[in-house]
Image (cartoon, rainbow, N blue to C red; front, side, top):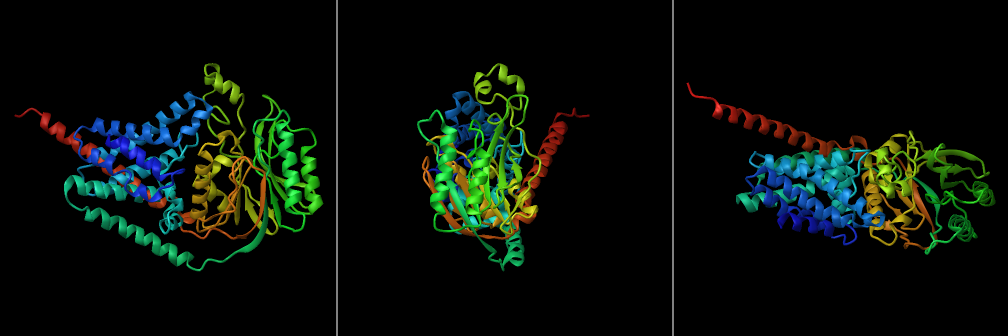
Length: 488
């Protein structure tokens, strides 16, 4: 019951309820259960219950793609988080146990970010802090997984007080000392942030017709052209952006030429999403293309992080046994290899695509290649009217906070928005509408400690927990061996 309650509280902290401050106490019931439990296997089972409740509700929109996809993903994520609860149970009697429990959760989220098949960190506890005043600014210092550590640590300290009737002063002092050090370095390096070069961006959301039309792709392209002309009838901008799949698979021949004509008409460069699918023997590519003001095609960024089992099937033989995979993912998307950025209007613009906004390390790759402004191109139509779109925006908001840079999210079906370096969400559009807006953003390099150090802060605690686990396992084995040794 306690584990299930923590799962419900963690969901409430996330979008769409967005009760972010709740995340600081959400895991108290779960950690009380673990701290009170003598049997280690039950700590593992508590994690499965917590994960099943939390991810089962938080990712319920996955059910759109079938019960099998939702069930498999929920169970897998529950098993991953149960590793954290198992480790927390193992170290519960050690000094600094609240710190070690939080380190276990942070370590598992770092693992989820990377494995398997490139990772799936959706639902990270730290993401809930994207809209929490004051606290959210820590994202630029410690990153999203650092915020996860701090939230779980607060719950662990409270749980320790409930179970052991004392305050974990040693753990509090250790965490406070390291956090103050990171904050001091961050402030010293980035206290004087340059405003950056102003860039006027026309954001076009062509919309996706519902119900689906026979000539859907052509209608979408026509909507983008018409909305661009409406938006720029009496003003000029530095760059026009169209979202992922604005020129999609199945559109009539000559679509790219129409986009080139728009660029020449307004003498303005365009960044637009262009999906290419020429059959099973040719590459299936999801990319953003850069067209210059004179209509010439200059460069393209190809999505590097396709969705496993959504845009490619890493276990190919499953297609023979799971009909939905054969129907929805008939062949694999070809991933890109470079985090290349475009030179547009005198600034460097990065164009991550859809799922890539969930990964802070992908944004760091772009920034290290000189990105001064991010334009996230996404579709979101597949999510229909579920709360996946608001969760997706929340991830993008966290990336803006981590890098302390402007991010423009341009979505085919919505939600499109401007996200400021301090995490504000401006010009937010509605789902399944045709809309457009012009924003003036500031192009500058990342102004945060996090973009320099990456996940150093949470990794410190994850490594410390790993060492403590090894120590405890070895200690128990030595003790067990000595107790079982026959007396002379």
